[in-house]
Image (cartoon, rainbow, N blue to C red; front, side):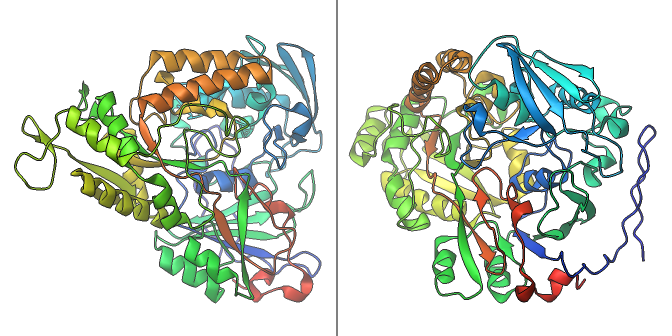
Length: 551
């Protein structure tokens, strides 16, 4: 029975409904990947999509002008790969001209044109849309349509990552479907639940709380995808159930494997562990600089830089990483990931020194005056809560270990586990003492500006951290025109941030996904699970019933 399509408001063309049952695949082109995820996507409107799950879906449904190569190099123009743009040229130091592939089509059959590119730029930069990528898109002065297949990006200044900013942050949108929609209504528009893109996969259906299904576009202008169907299946945050489903064969891919599950793959005939390479992830305990009860006031504890530094040096992060991530664990040493080209530079790091932490707490006046095991000062206990997503077993375990370490110091940290949507809402509204964050997705050090500057307040700077010296250092780094100058300036910025201890950096361990062994050509790019998924395939001899669309 055909499903009922969501009605699109005036100005948006109607599209054909997709049948509830998909026809069996032809013998020469089959394959289904069922991906287990801890939660479902937030929305499938690219400018507003924030979570890793939503980004991995839209990366298959939509397409950028160009994309990074497998090494995620954001500064070498020769490492970028064509997508909607078949080529590009640097007209001068302030202008990059893109030539669109004339074969590119939207999934409703309309051609992709330069008007779509210019429209996308205006949507991403519009404050009414409020895209998290807006600060990066604002680095571009304008986008000019020169003819139906030629578009020029103008920049107000020359800097190192111009090409990266032009292509990476924006998935191109269909103007003929969305151009008449008021900008303030785009985020909540039905398009975000029933998207039409120009990528290698077409959207089929979204069963709320259960699954999202895509089917390959056989006419995709670059190359026919290797798999015919991709399904994201939500596990409701139950990691144990997800692992059971993976090893029992109910699902094909688990986006994150904890160390104990990685060990199981070593003796499994069906499941292997595939690392995200290079990793763009780092996790951290973020201090709130504002009072959760009254954001107009400083936080009663964490507005104090000396207290934050004392707490940061007292945490044995290496021990925690070994316990959770295993022998291959990597301790984070700042707001940087292994994928960033500044990773490992000589920036300031706060060392682990529990004795120093205790001494500094005492010097700040924190003592256990009533013998209850918790330090206090002027009648206030050194007690606070941390919010953790219940969908992340890794972050929950880290929080428990750090809770015990703090307890030995006389610091009380209460753990509040929340469903992911509530967790995100609490973060966005500043209703927390400490937030257990995990950043991933952008391999450029410029992403530091999206979390750790004044301009990021209202975006990903959930803790309202502000340091004018950091803002200045970041601006000068963004303006650098050569890699050595940029490296030095980014090193200065990271050192300033680390010295302020706005967060306790925990782990940047390379995550691993569990993948069924029947898939060939498997790799996982560090910033996105599905960036290379169109290259995966299932050999005929290894097909399972679901590879032939056994719905």
